[in-house]
Image (cartoon, rainbow, N blue to C red; front, side, top):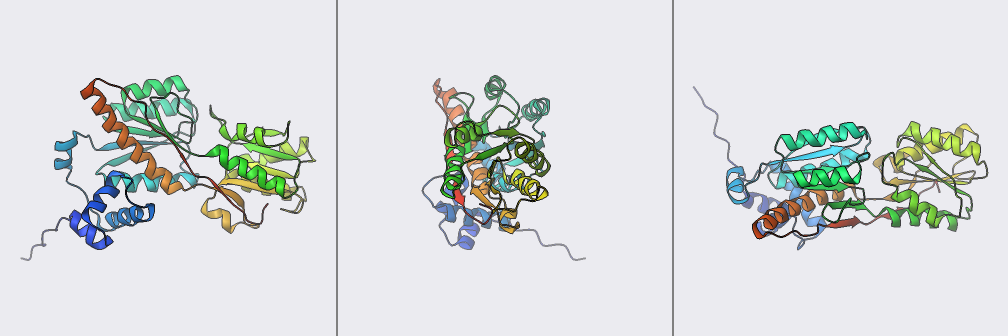
Amino acid sequence: METAAPSVRVTIDDVARAAGVSRQTVSRAMNGKGEISTATRRRVLATIEELDYRPSMFARGMRTRRAGTLGLILSDIANPFFPAVARGVFDAASARGFSVVVHNTDAHAGRESAAAREIVERGAEGVIGFFEALGDEELVGLHRRVPLVVADRRAPAPTVAAVSSDFATGTRLAVEHLHARGHRRLGMLDGAVGVDHVRRHAFTAAAAPGAPVVTGPPTITGGAAAAAELLREHPDVTALFAFNDLMAVGAIRALRERGRRVPDDGAVVGYDDLTLAADLDPPLTTVHTDKYELGRTLVEVLDGVVRARRDDRDQGTQQDTPQRLLPATLVVRRSA
């Protein structure tokens, strides 16, 4: 009787040969070192995924005493933004030998708290969280229990790491573009359902005083309803800046339902630059943020927080943790 040939474990040298780099470059990509370019890091991580390379967890555990699991808390997995971020998280975590446990909370404070509690109780190495509802005090308390990185939100304290799009710059670029196109009456559709209102603050600072803001769920339906309310109360508004691309799609729908053409009778700018933005009619002007890079950076920063916490315990010290802003750029298309 024939027996199956034993599988051959892929080595770091196999990855290096396939990616056309040195084994040191593979190691740097896996450990988030800054000595290599983003393009090279992505190529190496893609090769690792393609070859299904897995570092020896036994050897890794002997060196680092790691549990091997990260928790990822998302507010709405149905929003196309989050799968794009999650892919960056998965690739970077896999390259470091971690598995990822995902929780969806619908931006509900109780679910955010329950997800964090479950991740801690399962002995995860650390937590990456898109927290929309939990306050700063709760997040600081969580960080005392487990290494934490908050995503797309201001850090609740200097000791808590945060990675975010540069919302202030992105919003300012959107408003300046609308002003340059001759729009003087701007309105905003704000989808920040929780405690962080960076985009709103940036919008009110850059737009004309008293520019109207209407809040709604950060979805297509929420954007349509918010836009309808804003246009009903402020019919002189000629341009809308949306919290995200989904709300922008809703805004286009609301404008058309009122017989207004986009962009001739009303301009729309979104945020995130989802894949669908370029395929809309008209294609959506939006603020681009690299979602894959956000996910990858979240894991890189968490890895550093874990190492720093171990060093702090060994040395009896405590260090401030990273607060990173990722670049935001405006992509001009036909909607504005």
